[in-house]
Length: 90
View 1 (cartoon, rainbow, N blue to C red):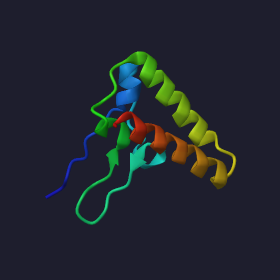
View 2 (cartoon, helix red, strand yellow; view 1 turned 120 degrees about the horizontal axis):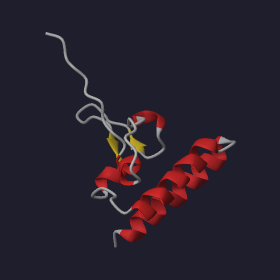
View 3 (tube, one colour; view 1 turned 180 degrees about the vertical axis):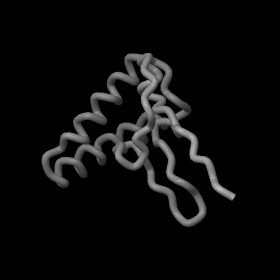
């Protein structure tokens, strides 16, 4: 029995009016899965982003993370992003 894979749309892109495929593990917001659970989008776990201004801001952060010139830059930006997420949920 063949399994059919469905295309997942990026919720950030959808919030700004675009229908783009989710880049999954190529996105810095993607949380890889493990033995029991599949990968997931950290943004989706926030309850979804529907505000275009917030989505635009997160897309800009994603672009900066993708453009990070060194792994040290990327690690620093990911750390700041995760701190911002944790602070906002308190």
